[in-house]
Length: 386
Ligand code: PMP
Ligand code: GLN
Image (cartoon, rainbow, N blue to C red; front, side, top):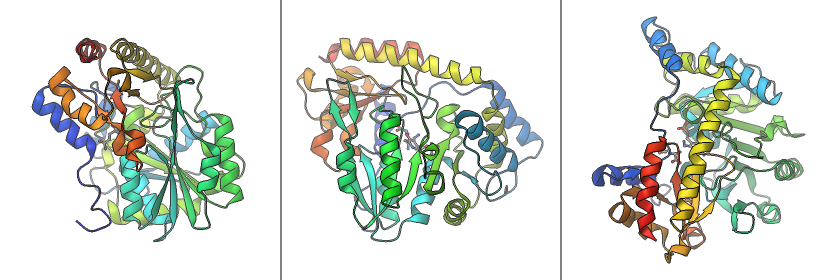
């Protein structure tokens, strides 16, 4: 393994899912639903396969049906208008969108600012692009029950070598959803310092309570400098399909596409047709999906609280971050490695998402995108750990 990647090894998700398999523990680690997405969308994929749509290399930017559906979704939901032919690119999941964006837009030595804790592929992709990651820590505010961005710290992190802000809202793993005010301040900073922004919005439909998802591209001066990323994995519960997309101004999409051409060339054809149909589902699908996830969030958050964890009730995503110190523990790694034996549950130590590992040490993430019965059993088991 070369020096750029030496520090990354195996992803925590693979390690923890393997641990779940070998111990038979309930896997609340890796974020994937244990129920597949809508039947009619699966049928749409089968139809595409049978009818021979997408069985050979689809067009590089993605099939027109999906690009049109992505543009329609952005317009309908956020009033953002993108030309399906020049401003939408289909990718192999959000993961490839992130990689291709960074490879296309970052010069070796450029600084890339990302929130810490960050989704693990960010650090690896910044490294592959030869960039330098500059983490800005989202800090736990117990009084507010959430992790919050310190805007002054963000401003201070920008230097003359900063090329790009890599934003993620709703945020994995903390569940923080950036507010309109925070987003407006980020936008102002980006415009003032002439920065590009890549924004990972894969949890755009999983927002709870009073929180609201507002795409960064909707703020003044942002549309032309923002690459917005989303994916069908989270919104439609098809994480195995790996269909994601990018929306951005033509020059940015062209750049990202140049990188994508040499990563995967194209993304799996038949699934693109099915996801086009999924994006056109009635509003009731999205509402029901969110409401269902909200019930699960409440169940797991309450159960973890009863078991003695300090819970940061997420405003978005399908993850709950907890602080294990009230249990008399302080090392999330050790805690997660022992948890399958102790309680028959697998979780993720947030420390892996930090450069400042000690900042993340006491935090542990649990996924709640699981059937209610599974969550209830997990909660029952976790009651014993305190
Ligand atoms: N970004 C974030 C914040 C994620 O949590 C994930 C994981 N699902 C991804 C990107 C990757 O998405 P995909 O599965 O579409 O590649
Ligand atoms: N996004 C998922 C998570 O955060 C996992 C994705 C992966 O395994 N790479 O759990």
